Figure 1 (cartoon, helix red, strand yellow):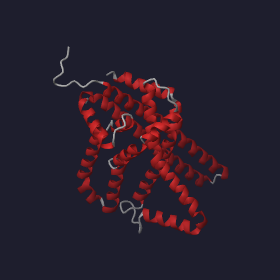
Figure 2: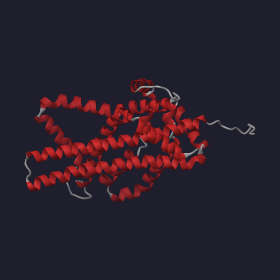
Figure 3: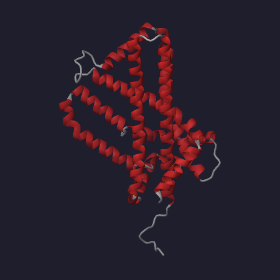
Length: 311
């Protein structure tokens, strides 16, 4: 397999199908970026108010919850709109990426086979595979880096450095096992979405496909690097956006800018947020295209059994 050609082909597809970026990837990337900013901000403030850096009488989580409850108590008429808005955002965050990713994989696979499939038709095909893919999504969320890092941060903040050092080997083993599982399950979602298998069947077939193509380790390394670059870009952007807001607000407070200065600052923050989301969407579509093409190529190769005779 020509890896450079495969990656180039995926990049050309990404550049020539920007409607997929706009309609399938941008909104989930925007939601993920906002949630990422909130996650990083929470972790920073939680560590800042913990015993590691400050002898605060209460944890940041307690302060946050009481602040929200006080706001609801003082603005009771806003309770229902806030709850409804929150539920809508939570549903969008958990359900929309699953649906759009399933639709995207269907469109990429079908267009590679020269099928004329529109984006609305892609949604139709994505809906047909939504439930099993959502089940797989929830399963893999348990082994995600974010989940494990959040648990490790919780242990460090609440149980202290000594307990964290004691549990660090276990956390390292969990991270290593999660990494291996992600490699073995690389093609499970493509079996589920493209070949319409069940979740466990897709996982078993993915493990088999990875093992059968173990000689393609270099390809897997490249693909993992693509994912790592995507995560790195998102992390950097997630840090930059809050930094811009914080520095801007600090400057605003120090020089007492007029009200229009705050409006300009808010506008710049929105621009940076949209840029971060669009860049993450481009990288995501490119990554999915590479994985989809690789899956189609690997599964199209005939398996040579021990009893087969080769010319």
